[in-house]
Image (cartoon, rainbow, N blue to C red; front, top):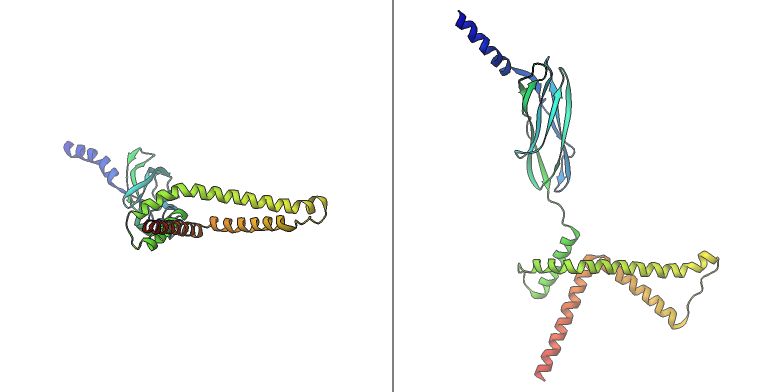
Length: 258
């Protein structure tokens, strides 16, 4: 009889530990800040937890995407309480499975481990679209197409070469845009100043000076419009460079024949 009582006493803590508490995730515990996303976008993952037991519980809540943890945080829920927790995930292109799990659950009052009946959430699927190409990537593609149009092929080496060229030419193009904008602003301010400050009609230039001034403004505006657009600037620049090389090559060839 003594041995039976001892066995019951020893088994009692394990029975308490093994009992499942009515707590954990509800039937639809995971939702997202956006049902559709683009690569690079930050998505907030929300998870709801409940505790319908008579004991306060605590533990660690882990958010996972495709089985990889993106965030873990401690939680504590009083008896009969519920709460919402969140994690931020930077989306990557493709199909993904999002879920959450409870680990290291314990009864905070009795200070012993417990098992909750819903320790893992159902999985939530999301499809993330690829990020749109950047302005520089679009320019690389445009220049590649222009080069291929001239050389009549699509060699893999063109891409790296174009990228290297753009790393040098982009700062030049942007500096040119800034200078042209400053030039046109200065011209506009000079023309408007007499009427704004002195309340008199501006004195118009006449003769060759006026024609040159107007022509410079028109040329600067046209150049600014072209340089601001990568889609215009690079194809035109490529046509000009390759056209110049072609013309120079033809002249050299004629000179050798002569």
